[in-house]
Length: 185
Image (cartoon, rainbow, N blue to C red; front, side, top):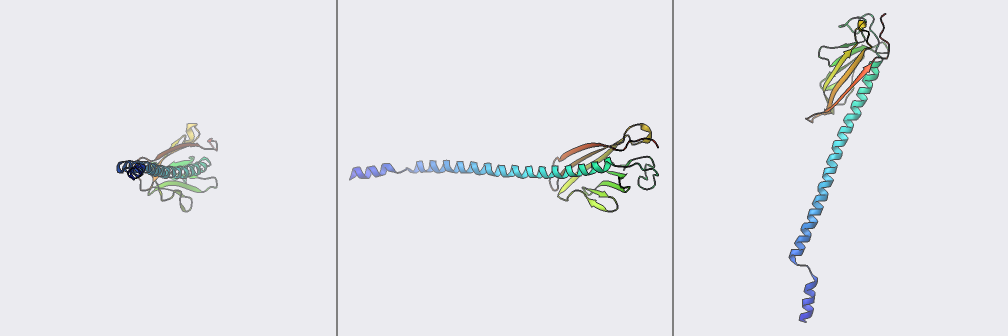
């Protein structure tokens, strides 16, 4: 009978073995959970960056298309009142607004207002959602004068980030040359 009792005791686990197994299992599950949480956070960040890139590329492409088709203001009284006649674009003193005559002969303006990019061509339209914040928008012109023998070019630079998030945003820049030849008339 003693042999039978002794044989039954050898089949079980000791308390130490059980604690080691539970600790090992908890570490494996904890590591797997940590990896899963890290992957979910990385995915969320990637989705934010993708949304930023999608919306900013749309805005840049939309503005590029409109600026490329700009026409020369021949009288200087309808749209580009600050620079006068013979110019294609007018940038304000701070550089965050550009005005031009589009291909439909309508005065069109892109500008930054309250961290949003807006368009005005008879009515104000927000081009970016309020979930995004444009912290910087700059327009630079080259070849704007009729006498410089250069094709007019407009450079757009902007920094965009998700609203409510601090830190560096995505910086985007593009240069657009005008499609119509800049010849003296």
